[in-house]
Length: 403
Image (tube, rainbow, N blue to C red; front, top):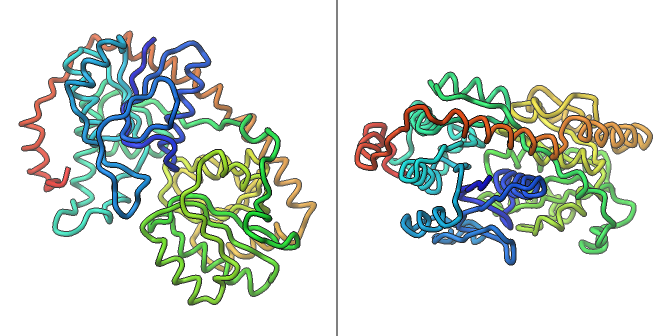
């Protein structure tokens, strides 16, 4: 089968969608499928990837806004004999997937990776749509496809509440466990001049409002008051970099906080494997891949049990979860792990076994392959006609003039 994945983000970018697309591509190919990725960002020397035009974000140079040239992608998709189109965002490349699906008569599957209602703050007034408008837009896009993949059952329920009527499959992204078994490449302590006696608390993710990064910094400040030999490493880039740096300075912990900025994915693995505990407070995750990656590396996790994190993790199995965003409780969980080596070791082993049993990438890729075949087989149902004029009139009615 020839699979065309249309995505606005791909490695070397660091985010859950880019990771998901890359992992599924690799594992599907290992099963004998042919996967082609179309994106404004692609890695060097990776076969089966095609770069589309894009505008670089000045404030986040590793991100690009796709501006695809339709006729070139049509010709390439025809040449590659694409059997199924799989979109990973309902925006620029998602629109492209709709056009290709309609023009070439191909089944179209969409993965709804992100709760878009939680990201409206990135759109400035007066263009920011209401939550209801975003729900209607999501429903329109999903119902324009042949099937939708939701990373969790909660996301499926959310989409059903929006009025999505096409089949919805629940399929999380698996974890590439083998990536956490290879020999270490470098010492994170030597790289950042961290004492061997220090406990390292790790955060990985976008430095952005929706990741609740200020809570992590405040929690570390309280932790540091009680346990001096501690260092917080925050890996990732994003719009809140300056604000987080200023907060660390205000709390007098700047000398104990390392902000790495953007980092290649193959290096992040070293941080998972050499840190002492993973701290994560986001309440908007659709799946929470980073917490599962931490467990796969044997790194105990303290997190807030909301949305995808609550679905992915089981409290007490490699992780310690709090139900509400409460600083004291969060810090107490961190301290219990850092002060009890035997407890920490048990959490580490439990986490590794949990991921191996429930989140293997092999299992998830086989299921996705089955979904493709099911949708291709049943896609003889009526094809939805994509009409750009009526589409933009629809967006105008919703007040989504920015899309």
